[in-house]
Length: 491
Image (cartoon, rainbow, N blue to C red; front, top):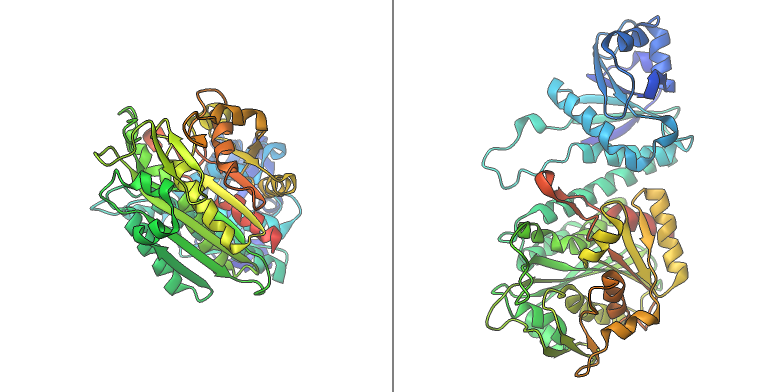
């Protein structure tokens, strides 16, 4: 799908389909008003006849509308004007995508300028990303591909003029969509395909694709030499060897300190000896979505050409029960030298993250953000709407909240008070890997905080936002929009 800009008289634009938004109660957008006037009121008349009201997700297809050059006009309901935000574009755009696929439109014009406010460039970025995401399908593991799910080849955004800012915004939207697609693809792959070794191979392929991206992969022998006893204790229960994947994106000056992203890459999590219950355990293939979001963010940066330096670190492993697996009560030594009593082997994400966070010290980072599907407690607290946000630096927390407000990829801060550290005390080691049922999201972050004292750090718990469960389960691509916006703000 290629995006571009088209200017000029909307009624004279040739296209297979012209997509126009309508707010609830048939409140016409600027584009819809233009078409209705040109057609002598026929567009509004057709809405009334067919009962189209403009509710979010409603669609109405008009064929050969009078005085309009496009072969078809697709009216898309946007809901109430005052409630429309960029993160609420998914429902109307998915409905539009279904209609466009059904009619086989290959050359599409989106006349949606003004629906998200007067900042045309910002709106263009959000519309491009949301529209591209609406056509996402995962059929890599199906014997027969979904032929009717093909996206349009060319999509143009109608605008008042083709400014450099608008073209740059479209480029950013395309880059973000590409990154989210990669994140979703990796998350949706099953654990027997997407192993730590597979992730490492995909990272190396990215390194060959992009000139400003260097990729290094550490094997278990190298990790053992570095003293990563916490990470390696998790992989001992699996026949799949662990990998530490390092991306180095160099888009800024050599003297600029890098921002570091650390993503949990548990390609399958059965819980180890502390075995998870069987229902929905298949969804534990999504336990690497934090790592997948690092992949996606690095791809988005490369596609866009962001002018800053970013390091991505993905500790990748499986967590399975085996004779060599961690046992409750085992004590391991992390790369930092701190000892950890493993009270619950299903709290393994923090074990692989803590060594990766210590490894990040060598880059003398400007900031470090870890991303992890870390705790079910976060799902209970925030549901699927907001990512949990904790950290040791108020300015960094504020920066991430601003990026969340712009991108629509929402977060909600939780406290990281020392009071909670009491729950992690162990009589046998420096720290226990769990702190009991109370405040599980916070105590998990408190554990990680012990390994982040040498840099500014934030933790994103994406257990509720990285994938959707149930019949329509699948990776969401979050929090790539948040991370991409945060890094663009820094650039």
